[in-house]
Length: 153
Image 1 (cartoon, one colour):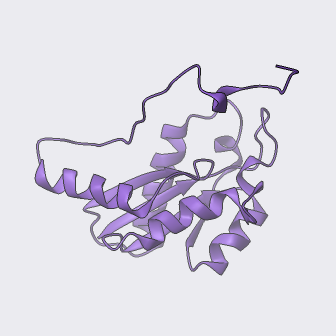
Image 2 (cartoon, one colour):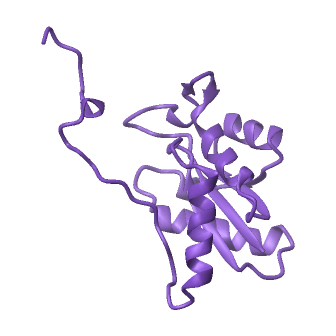
């Protein structure tokens, strides 16, 4: 079984409500969840969250919901710990016998695509010497996307 685990907590301090912020008419988390759901090689998608609004979105998309405990929902909580908790909950509560791969996707990253997910799976299957794969992008620090405010010039 290949599972995708999306992480998205409610309490962002830098950008409150970012996971449910509307992007092109949909909650930001929708895009991450759908990238995983649309990947033909993914068998099941789960969401780990403490946010009721995200839970409702997940349920509407037939995504399994893992209620994240409070201690994993603080600004100091490590994503690794939330990921590990989700993995254990998938194994325990969702009657999964064996997991070939577990894909980590963040709800605040709407640029994931199903093709990216599938490419990662293919790389992992072709390279059994690897224990993980990660998507990356080249960052141009002078891109207009990095602008913080609009000014006269």
